[in-house]
Image 1 (cartoon, helix red, strand yellow):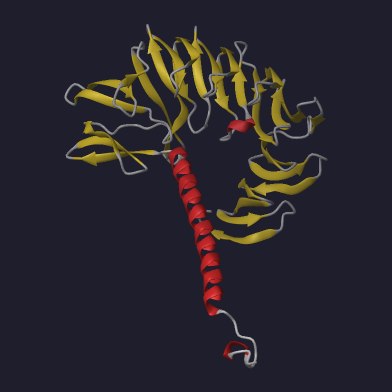
Image 2 (cartoon, helix red, strand yellow):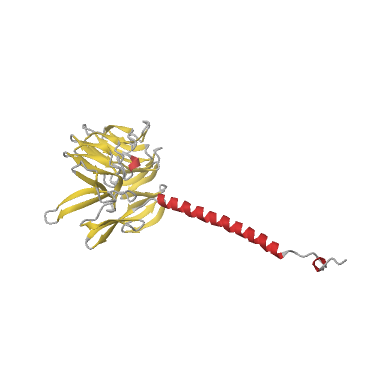
Length: 347
């Protein structure tokens, strides 16, 4: 009996079943991909809602407004003076209005992203504006100055009073970030932009020791004696010195006591006492000294590294100093080796 043609020769695939299997697998794969895309899209939507907006000023037809990083106009241009945004991630905008250019008078208010006035209850509010020696301007992004009944305090950008309005004045310490000079009853101190008192308000004068906040503050008491208070509020040197200048790593200080120069550490260790007529500056254990109108370098082991033969000597960086000799400038190191020849009128 014949088996029929279907069984003649080699066994053959049932192509309909093969295509059906492939189609099923393809549908499953596409379904999985589709679900993943949907989940990813939903996740992106959630993330996009949480993206922090930034705010920027805009100018149109002679007036100022605010736009956000999505391109949405937050405040239509309506203010004659540029709106100040202390912190671009906060919807806190300081606006001047009713400006009288002839008399120089104006009013100031703080508004939110709906152009609604906030931080009410204070007579005046102003940003903390500072600038460095190159006149680069910046605003403190954590606080603003508020005035109530003629006294000044600080508000954070959420409107909380972080320093009570009880001071005669609050002014930023020029060129130093996070440092404001406060005055009360004729005495001075330092407060940071969190409202924390760093230097008690009890000194005749307070100034930055260097251009860095971290290096602390030079204070002078009523007896005209100087001391050092660190940026964490700790006393580095008590007020007992005739003069203090320059520092090294917040540990070594050049001081003058009872008319004599020396180097002292915060733990009381003394170097070079009575060994120099005038200590000018110090870097990495090397002290620039001046004797008989000439400059040189001595280290803390009392070794004269550079003889006092130069007309001027200024630290640059690493182990390099700008020196002046015979009216010309060059560069030397602390071994008195010439790095750049003395042939320039200025460096």
